[in-house]
Amino acid sequence: MSSEANALELKDVEIVYQRRHRTPVRAVAGASIAVKPGQIVGLVGESGCGKSTLARAAVGLVAPSAGSVLFHGEPVKPLGLRSRPASLTGLQMVFQDPQSSLNPRRTVGSQLADALEIVRRTPRSGHPARVSELLEQVGLPASASSRYPHQFSGGQRQRIAIARALAADPTVMVLDEPLSALDASAQAQVANLLVRLCRDLDIGMLLISHDLAIVNQVADEVAVMYLGLIVEQGPTGELWRTPRHPYTEALIGAIPQADGEHSQPTVLPGEVPNPAAPPAGCRFHPRCPLAFDRCRTDAPPLLTVEPGRTQACWLQRADVPA
Image (cartoon, rainbow, N blue to C red):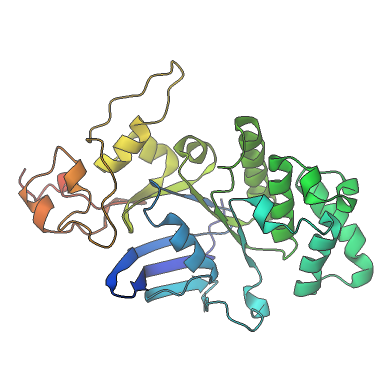
């Protein structure tokens, strides 16, 4: 992994959706996360926790209500009617459903050539060769350029979407649930592709997923999100071996084991609370049987508990009585 400075950095990002005559929804309540070149950072959590909203803010599709998003130190401004500055074209996004993100009426080659035309780093005369190179980088034959998206499988279409992002020579890719629409075999293949591209091209990746098993296999670091907040973050192997937040422990415990069983989570089952009316104190305490009085009144800060690891849980604080 590269030791360079952060390529993408989100600091205390808040995203609030205003609703007419209704309580605003604070979808992201102050989240910070960073991605270095050549590093895969997994962002995990249940549906509705704010992962995809944070991903969209990272690339400028959603404007933060507070906080900042920096790409190689430059602020990422929300996308508008004008074209994005050339300095930000190296920040690319891959969406969950390649079927909807690709134009069904145009050939794959023409869509990749469009991307090359926008970034203008390859002369038009070199577009065919570069299109073939991009397809080969993602494991597809050059002949795929003359075909249409519907002529490919779901996994192949996601490879095409990745190839389109690669056309901009990105240094950071934000991937919003890129594997969830694929079957198990295609998931493994595309996951391996992402790791290879990250290492070979030194691309930083923010991988949003609810599939912790895949994140465990491919990510260098993992950030765990609950109800708009990062509650734990650290190196993947360490976090999996010794989770420090009961929510992380429950997520890991819910992963199916080889024998078809699950380990025993330490939290009670239950629905994620309404983001428009989050509980007081620790947002997770209504689902945690280990919660005590302070959990119900005071929100725990995200603190460094050891080098490279952070967590937000009163249970891990030695200065807090049980």
